[in-house]
View 1: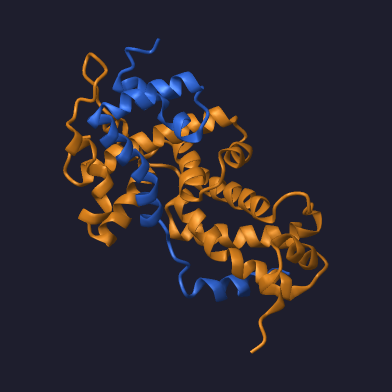
View 2: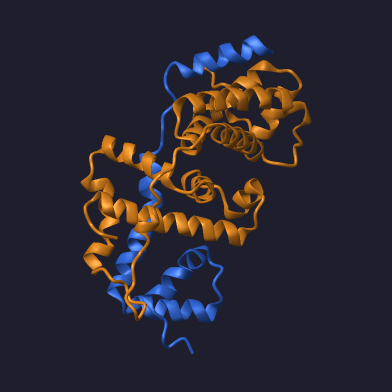
Length: 78
Length: 203
């Protein structure tokens, strides 16, 4: 069973794998494949880094003038 | 100096006091969430003007809606729902220009299903934040999000950037958890390839 798991299959399962929703047998097959596949190890590393990098790069700070203007706006409508 | 007692109070207790008309409690909630709501709005709309409007509309709706807020839900979830809906409304109102799809950045495989790229190239996206100037990466990240089809973008922003749980995102978007995972996965694949491209490596 699952002898022929290829990189493309692993990529298709990756999100579910990381979320813990993959059944144990498939999980083991994926673990076996990745442990012997430097390409998949590298891919998983970059897949996991992607949310972190985008999170940091899109963390817009509240502009200084916005907090007071928000309070003025709310005060004018209460 | 005395610590502000409101600062240690839970969101839901503050919301109950704010609903009863206590202004300092509302002010504390505002201070706690204004930056998060603004950040979420920027990520969903990619427009600072829209984000400002979303921020105002969200807290006005929260202020008016607080008496109907039920204490059995988390205040943050309730507020995120208001903010997300406001952001999506703004985005819909804006005619989106056609953008070049990120499909080209999906991973490539050979006929046997093996990754077409070598390990060093497959890893390249992980180094985007080391290789690229911070300001440039911020601009490109925003442009990348804007190039994602909306359904992928919304799921990715809420799940991966705002770090809500899959169940919370499913509830907010009105889809099931499997659909959230599928959309987030697709967004991660495209953005991973996009980051790779930014550092000069074919994904």
